[in-house]
Amino acid sequence: MNSEDLTEFMTITEASKIFQRTRQAIDLLIKQGKVESKRVGARATIMVHRPTLQNIYAKIEMKRNDACLISTMKEHSKVESEVNSEVLQVQIKGLNKIIELHEASIVNLKDEKLMLERKIQCLEEKNETLQQELVKISKEMHAFINNESGMFNFGKLKDAFFTKKK
Image (cartoon, rainbow, N blue to C red; front, side, top):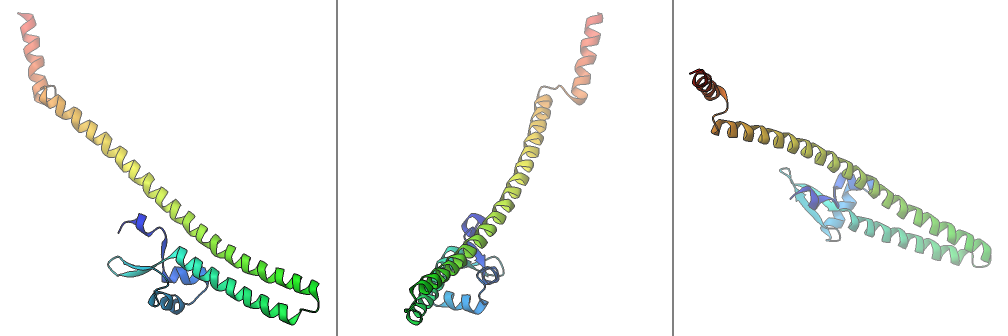
């Protein structure tokens, strides 16, 4: 599996840090089939699908916000202005949490992008070096074939020098 296939995947440890959940919680989602996962590398590291986790945790946050919203509305139905204020605050908190999750993903994607750009730059430099070496070898082979280098060239010069003097 190449690195392009893994751009949307992360380790369980990374996911637990980003989404502020335990490894066990993420493992449970994998076992329940709610999150796509892949085993990668010689050590069979489990990688989880980042967008799926984002959606799951965003939905959980929205459900929590909805539950808070409903209970808030029931408790404060007499004072309409307070309800509106608290509802908005709960919604804002939920939206802020969703934004935090997406921002964390953006940071990770930017880091991955920088890493890939460095790899590309390194490969381009190696490619340029190999191209230069190939051109050099090609010129040497051309010269060798035309007897224009080393001892062959000396022989031509000697023959040309002695032939002109006669």
